[in-house]
Amino acid sequence: MALRFYNTLTQQVEPFVPLQGNTVRMYTCGPTVYNFAHIGNFRTFTFEDILRRWLRARGYQLDHVMNITDVEDKIIRSAAAENKSIAEYTERYTQAFLEDSAALRLERPERVVKATEHITEMVAAIQELDARGFTYRSDGSTYYRISKFPEYGKLSHNDFGGIRVGARVDADEYDKADARDFVLWKSPKNGEPFWESAIGPGRPGWHIECSVMAMKYLGETLDIHAGGVDLIFPHHENEIAQSEAITSKPFARYWLHAEFLNIESHKMSKSAGNFYTLRDLLDMGYAPEQVRYLFASVPYRKKLNFTFDGLKAAATAIDRLRNFKLRLETDKFPDGLDQALTDRAGAAARQFEESLDDDLNTAEALAALFEYVRDANTAMDSGEFRAGNVAAALAVLDRFDAIFDVLRPTRHETGIADVEVEALITERAQAKKNRDFARSDQIRAQLLDAGIILEDTKEGARWKRK
Ligand code: AMP
Ligand code: ZN
Image (cartoon, rainbow, N blue to C red):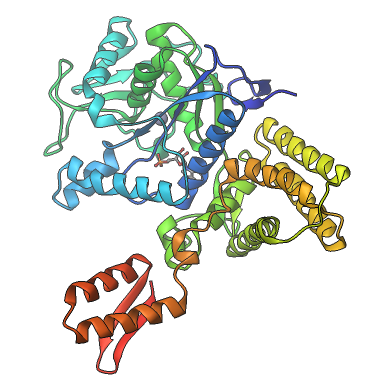
């Protein structure tokens, strides 16, 4: 069966076919950069990365846009508290987000775009909504009138029949999810930063940015729009209301939503003390590929229960695969080829592919891989595995790793061996004795690069790993 996804809009699993040719035009809601992204966020971003990679493995090209929400209530409050401009404040967390994404091996979307660089287009879109009668002004702010959009609720499958028409919310924070009119353009309260515009001074609401940036880069109808389940309502519902009011065309054809990550079966929250960023986990000594594996191993529409046991199990699973690969690359196998084993490799690759075609069932894909690895290891032990079987086995691993991307160790993990560190330290001591400080500094930098911290003491240099 062909590639298919569960579509939140239709509540059905549907075959996936892009609208135009071979290119998938995809928009995913990016981070709000008021702080470091937490691992819940990265569960969703990892799902989107697996989605990207599988679409490409299936022969599609991608035009993927992800926004950075760099203006929003929490940002404005936090920036003011630190006496910084919005741009100064968000720059740090934008960089941190990109670094964390790279550590998790998330492919960079074709375009990563900032809300604050699209204010003009947002104002124009609001004017367009205004011209079509979808807005009203109040206290200098502009609101979207949902009673004008009868299809409101079609994504979240909410029935808004009983909701008071005209009530409004003067906030665009996520926890204000409600079936009421929402703000498109917010007038500034005293001291708040604002943009001058034809619709008055103010700043954009959160929802309009995604409609505008998605349509600017991808056209009026996207193939895929994705995010976490918390965005279905109101954010994505509002994006549909805005975009379709402007274009009278379907905004996105497939809506994909990732379930939440919980920690040890509880909701992650700062107050409960179970709140982690990726950096926290790396500081504890876990490798990024462990985190990536754990996230990728649970199908995206299932809740992911993050546990430290799960992280450790991920390391064991990765080791098993790395050892298998090492065996393939270094063992001496008898000449010839066992046809049954080659067929077995082909079947494993097919099962892997069919599982991912089935709405990205990553758990089944992994099960197919591990069954094959077990069989192949057994065949190696019994001598049935031949030199001629190596290529097909490596091909299975490659197919897997093009999606999961966990086989390559992160550098500091393999690192430099203790004896090499000692040798360099001895050489550095000698260089210092010879007053060759250029060389001694060079060695210190080289060690630092490899994650080794040197401390000079009276007894000589001491060292530790970062
Ligand atoms: P935000 O930075 O809050 O806009 O969120 C960025 C992305 O992370 C969105 O797609 C959210 O739906 C998603 N997200 C937020 N919290 C979680 C969580 N606990 N588990 C999974 N995804 C989440
Ligand atoms: Zn969005």
